[in-house]
Length: 411
Ligand SMILES: *Cc1c(COP(=O)(O)O)cnc(C)c1O
Ligand SMILES: [Zn+2]
Image (tube, rainbow, N blue to C red):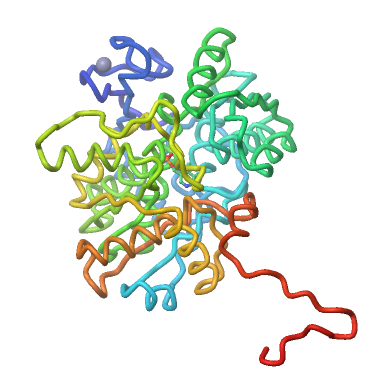
């Protein structure tokens, strides 16, 4: 038995028994009423000592706190390293740490959500899982579906980086390249999944995918209880909101005394969450949906190239509750940060992840983050899936003939 008490609508507050709804609150159109999974925290508290005693092998170490009955699907998500990052810290003027999510089994933080969503899908007897994705969620769902013996259908924008379109197919998924934006792919996935009875993993409507993302917050609370800030990139905002839920729960359960402030980072081509957060903070235009772009965003950081984020409200609430802030960074700053992270710490992260590093620099420049503060940057995904964009950040190969002709003297 899971310790789930109810699903609560983020919009109207109505509560449902887990057996009564699968996705969003039926009282609202579309995906307006996202449901939040609520637990019996007294019972969770009783399980906690056992969870915290040993090492965190993977996210299933937190199984009593996750909404899954029976044997979960295991591929090794979670339990990632928190690296000291002294060279990066010197470059940024802070006490830096890197939470290395690039080592998740399919290469990104999406594995935390997929592990839980696919375990749920199998437990509920579904044969087919589906999602719309800018790439990493696709690969992740496909990998976990393969592991669980389920069929997988993926909707992606047709202009995806090559490796991100190959990886899910290698795991046996059917990939549908939608001639349109991520928002178009998302809508099509929602319609077709509803029609054909496929289990939809999309974290903006599936209440369980985000539950897996909480485990990043659990790990951060355990590994960096004294962090002042956690910097994360924001696309839909689900990852940041999920991590915040986990951080808050561990504070509530007494595992840590304090929570860090969140620094949410977006790219200049896709700023909707940032704009909404700033508008709400100014109190001038609270709740407005400024900065949304129906045509999709425009940035090299494809994983956060989301014109109309589905979880902007949740992400803004997380930023505000944490006392944090949102910043926007240019593609040029992202490229510099990608190289900096690689050179300083040996972590090859994709542009979306590097945006968080660029965001720390921007926040220090603005005085939001004080010099010397302890800042965790979450390296959300590996750069290996998109070497084309990384190529723009690196030096050329030096051509040398077999006799060594061309070798620079000063090397
Ligand atoms: C999905 C993703 C993000 C953004 O997460 P959201 O939940 O969409 O905000 C950031 N980095 C990487 C590598 C991702 O795959
Ligand atoms: Zn509702």
